[in-house]
Length: 95
Length: 320
Ligand SMILES: [Fe+2]
Ligand SMILES: [Fe+2]
Image 1: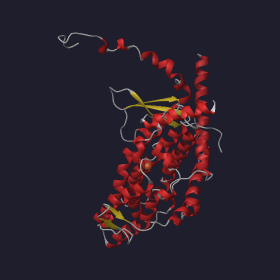
Image 2: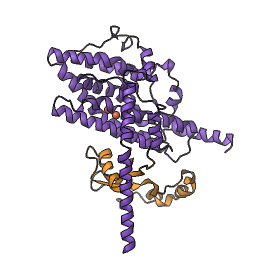
Image 3: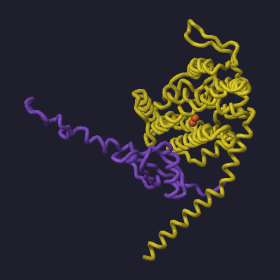
Image 4: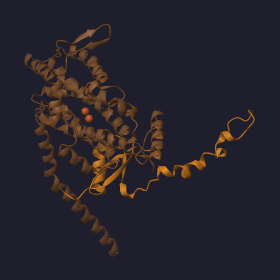
């Protein structure tokens, strides 16, 4: 069997202009060009997209869920970042 | 990690699933969860891939251009389903090559239904109608399964399946309303595919080993017998509509239960096929392994070409 394994790529698709690229899945391809072509066939057979990004999976740095506490919990007690924290009289409309 | 710590993590984990939270690839998970998911998702992927073979058999002989583009698109979808599922499976820490290796060595299973031959054009109708029909019943509940990548892949798969079943039913309808020979052909296909389609939904609940655990992890939401009953109840009226007869003399509407009663399934046949002795097991594996091996030079050449291009790009950069 071949030892030359095609690397893994992550595929992001913009479904229409005005929307962001969204992660659709992944696939194997020899290089970026082939990854784009394969992504077209695998993920957009029914006009699901108008633009594709491919990124070699090994280039993605992901946060570790084990660190979720220190990463995301500090935001939990900052209620003053939300509009509902502020008391205004009922007479104030449209704010 | 101590045994107590693991136990604690497991409890938190099970509670998350019970709350309908999704599990994502980098989350901690019990080893058994990982293994069970690798087994089920890869089996599912293998079924999509091997499932292309019986239908691929008829693409070049489809009776009209309309039928040909539809069948081609369907088979291409099945390739897509296999690829979505393989990549979902790889997020659990197993490589694509290991997965292929398991399929090619016979270690991994795929759906027993694909070990039956497709001998007439009507089989394309029966497969779309019955086999994809049964697959949909199996797959819809998986759209809300607990493992995020699997659930997302299944949502995409389910969206695409409905045309598969409809194009199959259309083939059956056309044949059933055609010449007497065409109608016979449709009936013959139904006769051959009916029972294997019922078996496809898995062994009876009494024999099914994984059900309880799978229910907890939402890999299953209904038992095999419930799914089978659902399939029969929805399919019998469709057969009536076609004017075809389901090959089961015991099939009868039961006023009391509100379901169809049906005859005994030949489970010996099912287990024979699962163990590798179905009519087409050998051919399917030979074709699949052959395609992989004969493609080796193409994969190698593509990789060599990619490396050469990359090197040239770097050389130019350095020269500037
Ligand atoms: Fe499929
Ligand atoms: Fe399908």
